[in-house]
Image (spheres, helix red, strand yellow):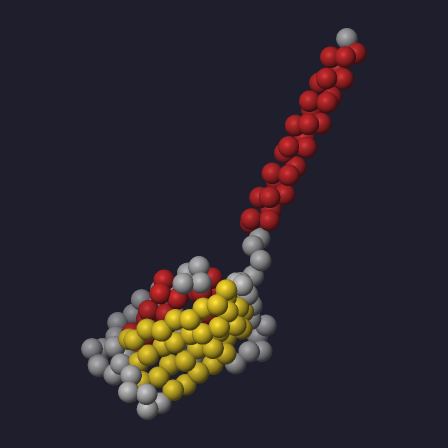
Length: 135
């Protein structure tokens, strides 16, 4: 009888060992590392007569130059680092035709990022990109 109880004990320990690593993996997945990146963002008119820009550093420490850095970092993270996949606030814009060009260049999660898009006006830019280009 002793061998059966020893076999049962070994089986119980083996079962516990297979459960522990799985729960550790779940704990890591629930708390992902904060997004890391540094992007120089610019907005200019389509004619190139004016430009404004700001540096966005993620994760935001609260002391960077971007006025909505924490929200911008979260927006980019939700979009998987794909700025074309950003979705901003849903609000109405006028049909005013004053094209603006938004550009981003820098690093995001160990890779380089370069993006540019034209929007009919500044309102449409903010509507489509949320906090990222709201500076």
